[in-house]
Image (tube, rainbow over all chains, first blue to last red):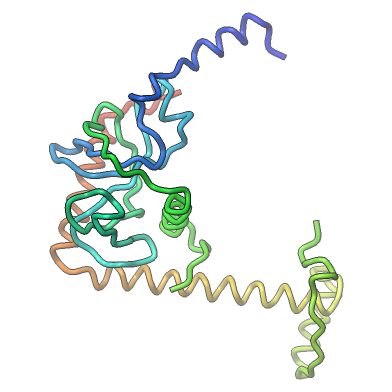
Length: 133
Length: 96
């Protein structure tokens, strides 16, 4: 059992950024990665996204071209908030530095959309992930 | 925890099987892998469904990448490079 002093130290480390500033799970952001701007969906848990102790989030990028597949979904502007039809590519789930997230878009994924996205991510890494065409 | 559904959720199925199939199922019971012939059937079917799902996902994944048009493949490789370059700037040892 940790001493009260240890508890205080542990609690102090879990200082959160202002919730309005921190990226949130399901939000769509533009990220500057590799000198280019990419739209991404934040998929990591908010406890990680909000803490100042961790500089990065997990994100899934959109592409402009592609096809539907086990790990890729076409999304219309009305669903993504992006100006053009785009393809969400779960097989490119990546670590993105929070400082590279430069613009939050107004649209946010629903819980249902996030569950579908997590299923897509699973299909990229687990050969036994459930899949029906 | 039982590997098979509770009896109340099970459905009665009367059928015949080949001698080889019966022998196979009985071996599952004899080895202790299944508690009964019914459970042996469930185990075998579960494995077949898993293999079918794995095959379905493998084929669809291969088809996706094989049939990706050149500009989409080029963009995918560019996205991967861009994201990898960003990840390379993160000191993972400093992240907890």
